[in-house]
Image (tube, rainbow, N blue to C red; front, side, top):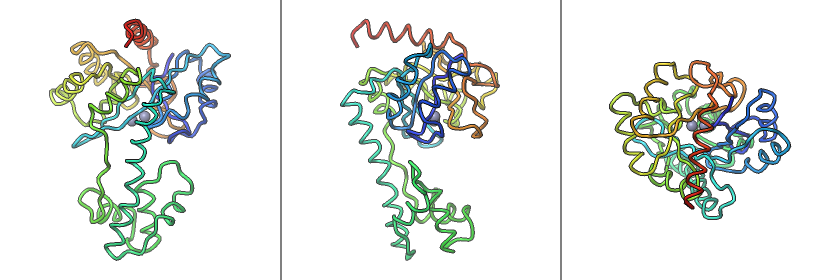
Length: 286
Ligand SMILES: [Zn+2]
Ligand SMILES: [Zn+2]
C-alpha cells in the first residue's frame, strides 16, 4: 500500500508530519508523499520520522494553477525541497495568496463596511490559511448579512461586490516550477477540473505539451468507471499513473490514508513506475 498525495499541518492537514508518518507505518504503507499546498515545510520532519522505518517518504508539493472553470491542482513528486530557487518560487506563490485578503478588506471598506484585517485574522483563530469563509462568518457577526450563504452571493463569491479573483500560476509556470526542482509533475484529482471526455482530453494534452508527466488515476470520490477513463488517458499520452488519498484529516470526504478510487487500496505498482522514471531522469542528469 502507498499514498502519493497527503497533507500535514504544514498546510491544511491536522496531523503533524511525524504523526502522519506514524499513521502510515501503522497502516503498513511503504511509500508516502508529503504534498502540502504551496510549501515543503513538512518534508524534513517526515523524512526524519521515517528514517528508522521501512517507509519511503517522497518530498512533494501541491500547486494550484489557473483554470477558467473548475480546479487545477498539480502535485510535484520528488521535488528537491532544499533547492533555493524552488523555495523562492514557492515564496512568491504564498505572497500571491496572502495579498488577496487585504484587497478584499479594502473593497468591503470602500463599500462602507467597517471591517479590519485584524478582525478577520481573529476570526480565523490562527489558521494557517485565512480565507473567504472567515470573512463570511465575520460579516454575519457584524449583521451585514443574515448568513454565510448571503455573504458569498452578495459580496465574496463570483460576481459579488467584493469579489477578488484568486491569483494563480499559469499551468505551464506551475509545471515548470516543479520540473526545475527535479520534481515529477502530476495532475491531481482530475475530476475536480470538472471536465470529462473530450474536454478533459484537451486539457491533459495542453498540460502534456508543457511538461506534465503523470496523472492521478486513483483518488477518493472517483468510481471505478472514472478510474478507467483516467487509465486510458495515461496510456494515450504516455503518462505515469499516480494515486493518493488527499488525506487532510479523519472526516473530510472520508479520505483514508492509502485508499483511492472506489475505496480501493492504491497499488504499489504506481510507486514502482514513478521510482523507475525518477531513476531514469536522475541518470540523464536532468
Ligand atoms: Zn488538491
Ligand atoms: Zn491535496
